Length: 384
Image 1 (tube, rainbow, N blue to C red):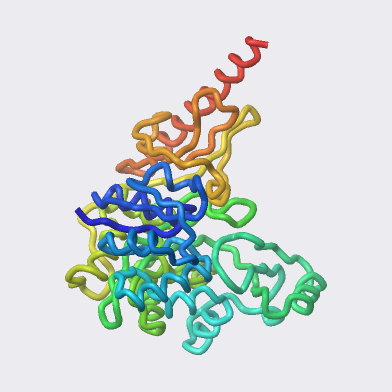
Image 2: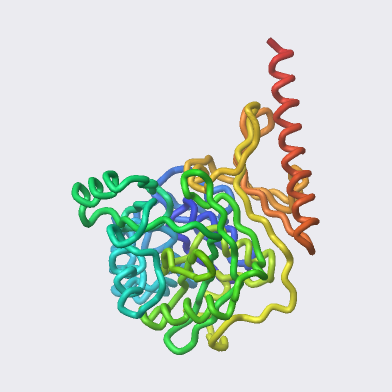
């Protein structure tokens, strides 16, 4: 059986551990925290700080068939790179490509040099603008700037730390690419839905309204430009009929691989294993799927005050998550909820053959969760 060491147990680590379980791999999670969210689903857990490069760490890594960094901590990545080079470890990660994608300034410069459409930088764009940190990914610190005064002040005070680009209305999509120069395969397109803080709260697929071949060609072009060996996701927004690149990330993303797995049956962690440890012989271009189910992968928070979608960020601070089948009527649920908790925080995964059937299933699941919260509230009040 394939054994994988997963470094980091928060959002990316949770995705990786989930995919490892679905692939039939044995997963060993390594994290400096005592109880990261992914701990509830892994086969083995070792509490270690990889930056210390201890003997136990090296022994654990050498016992695995391959290693998957699931963290964006630069110190941890640097330590893993040194261990990879010093001990010839199989690390499924492209450190050079990640360094480009982790910097909005470097990646946006790449887009401009090669005439790849992207939102314009302040002051060339139009109000409103959106600001985000130049390093890293995710929605933390993202803000909307609705006046020239706000945009100018931020550009002067935090020069170099923040990227300020025009905010474009439209639907956002993601596509993953795996491969090496000259041989890249792109996978199913997913739609990204965000909450009020611009954090992804819902992923749906497939996306028949999108020209998948165009998006695939754009993603493969960028992969070739950065000479990727590994995995990269590309996020775009379709604004007035034109695809514009929002960002790239050369690492295993969270959320979209699980949606793709449930829709197409393709496990992107298995694909990565084949690239780094097997015989990679995929064709160059979009993957072809025999059948695609419609899927909704969503994060919800429910309490006596109501139920709503929330960005995935709040799950990073959850207790270890457990995976359940058919809980609340959903196909699968990831949650730290225990009976009689005042709040349900969960990731719900639902599939159907048609979007209208998927909508009905999602509504039934939300109704069931609301009913459980109401019942627990009645029990607590009656015991007072």
